[in-house]
Length: 171
Image (cartoon, rainbow, N blue to C red; front, side, top):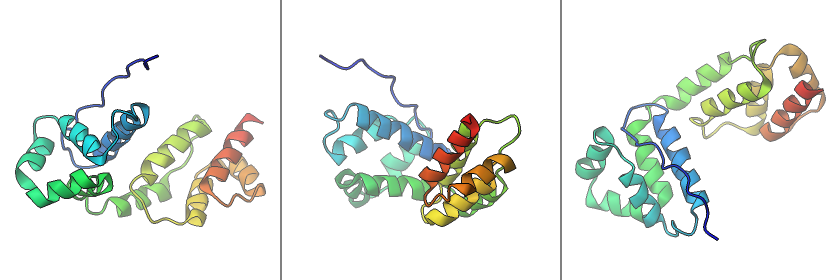
């Protein structure tokens, strides 16, 4: 029995910012769903490059990278992701994300799941934040009554804090 087809990933135009993270998320979803089709890193990179739209991304791949850089990317998906981030993510992306994260607050009209989504989007640009800092930032942005219930559970990980927040909202 074959799997139903899912839509192709969005074309990556090469805009600077979080669009590169959105692109990689969509590509990784394709790789996960069609696992047997993308057996090697070279298969993944070839598919990713085929999803580049005309413009900066396609030009960067075709004309800017050396043959050695391209070969390293074909050999290692993580290297490809690193090259994409180096070119299309702002240099200070992590710093900017930390600043936005410190100001992120759940609004009275916003459910926990919406807040969690916004939190995770901002966290996607930060790779070196400790679990304790993730928990602190997450809980600090929750509505005060929800935050109090989450702190009662003494979460040690972001996953535990998110689960406690969702449970507190449902109670």
